[in-house]
Length: 588
Image 1 (cartoon, helix red, strand yellow):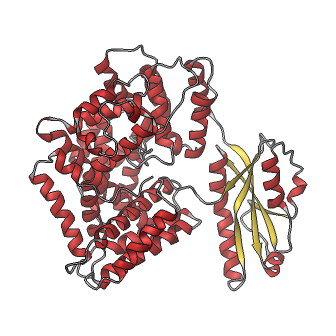
Image 2 (tube, rainbow, N blue to C red):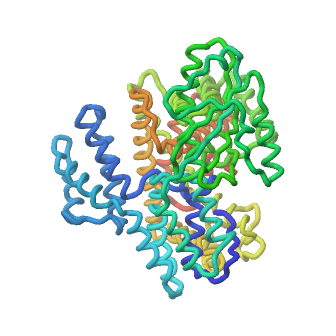
Image 3 (cartoon, rainbow, N blue to C red):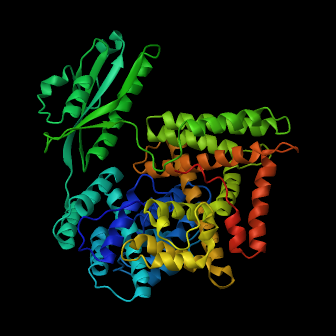
């Protein structure tokens, strides 16, 4: 949750909530629970159809993979009101999904095809539903939070749908911030009309310029293939008008020719600068692959900056890094380095820790680095996956993935509540509320499991509607009779994480077996990076403390099962669940 300082003070609480939640969904620093999801009720129809067709062709062998997506589809359709069913009813679709079996699913395939065709205007339906909710007058206090919930169920799939249509997260975050926060119109209605225009945007033509450093032999031999790439000898011939001195300096450094330098121009059609750069990197990578194949013993490097020019607005060129910015923010710096530079050698030199455990930790660190350094998203994905899967591999087990799914969901479920409460605590501090709250206890974060805190935060609904809404949700979950809602909260996360890991594994198989290059793998790859980082910090934190008895990674996994089993036995006592801190201090 980020600080949003509204310049237009006429917005009502529903309008402010919509803006705050939309920006949170798109912000690179939001934790995965609050970021835009890979799927929404519209896209999951296509995903389920694809899975059924792949199962029919034998490309998916385990029907459980299909059932996981089926269950997620049912859950999404239950909460959604904007998917339209014309040829048949929503109830009929749900009954078909309930009855779907390994040898009886053809009617589901046909119905999915019809539904996908009938929901081509899903984005418009979401906007219509959103307008009804955010243009209403204030209502009584309790119902405010129920209305926020309705808005959230619209905003989340709306953002996912905009991403699916071809916009980048970075552009959408910039655009929404400008329209509603930094450069708003006189009224919210006018700003919202400006926002709606984005749904009618057409692709524009972009020219992207890449800089290659190589040997003279490579430079002389370069002959791009594919039709989208041209070699440019001198970028100064672009005759660019540069008003910004900082940009001018960067351009002059970038455009200074050398005997080892080659410039590639790539022409693509896209909805924004960031998406254009992502699309342009594919033909560049293919040409670099061929050059490396022909000159595998010579120097070849792609410079990290690229110049992006919108041909409809050439007066405003932009430089962007070619490395994809992964979602999620982690603590960095000398203090973190020093901490692990102390802990890791102690683990490696501890003869009571098995050599297998040490190798898994070292390999996971290496593959995390290789993933971070990789240029292509698919290479990042594979490196993160290898590091994660190796942690859970076991020679006596037939499936490393089943172990990964079992133990990772267990471990993350144990730490899930505390992680989210710690993030909530950070939001309180970011907004400066820690100076005002009567129930704030400073470094003693046990105040987060006191009901009075949430009652107090809910009174800030006018100033900080998203924070107040989250306080209302936490109060409902943490203080329900018999801890029923807390149990459901954790169990639901465990189930959803298992389904998402199955989705990731399916994509892994497509990349490995079919050399697939997915258009929406960035979000999935960010998830993988988080899971690998989470596991590394878990292992290092645990084994750093093991000095007196023999210990190995299998004992560690069993301990996590014991912890979760103990929480279940105690019926998810709030104090016990909160005490399961887990390795969450690596998040920034």
